[in-house]
Picture 1 (cartoon, rainbow, N blue to C red):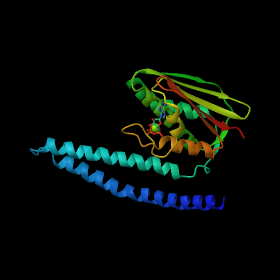
Picture 2: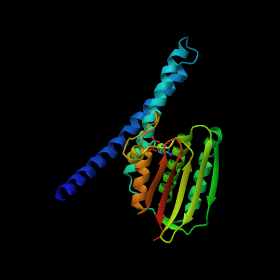
Picture 3: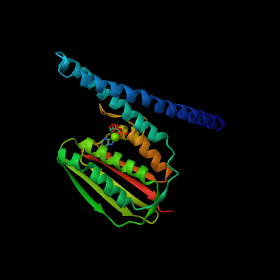
Picture 4: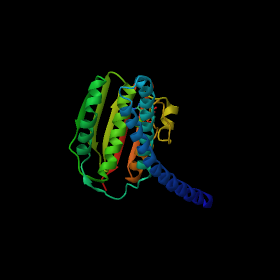
Length: 228
Ligand code: ADP
Ligand code: MG
């Protein structure tokens, strides 16, 4: 027991250092990206423009990717227990639906919603919005082209819930067990931090996170937030 406590204290210190490091890496990344864009501009009209912009474009994309990893990572290290307010989960979901609408159209995915009127609950709105966005983003990515994304909400005596269902690639039992492990991703462009952050946020809200998935059929993830 004693050892566990020491271990988690060590982890907390490492976590703080990692967060500080991630934060500090951001500034040089921003300047690298800026200079790459400047190089692109200066190359205009140069006889090797095509060849060199091909390289600098890849470099900008890679910097974007590093920025994405850092953004997700820093979200994970932020405490989400401050800034809570009474809010309705449906409102948060409607905002996210607007954000993903275009992507769904581009991927030819039908979005079906069934939002039941809900009691307001105590939540960090931005953090919960991030969770819902991560879930819908994963659902869209699991389907790639075609399929149905269904969003339902409902209420139980102790919880309000949102259920995100997709008809995508689904997961094996082992893959489901991996969900939430930092950096676990099966995507070439994935950070593997989306669900780590999401589960942490839900845990901090004393909520529940349930996954049901079948390989080749689809996935349903239900998030519950306590009313009290
Ligand atoms: P990322 O999306 O960057 O890969 P996440 O933490 O959001 O990271 O998800 C981790 C992994 O979990 C994904 O790479 C994918 O393999 C799996 N996953 C998550 N959501 C779904 C889903 N709806 N359907 C199938 N697999 C999923
Ligand atoms: Mg994701």
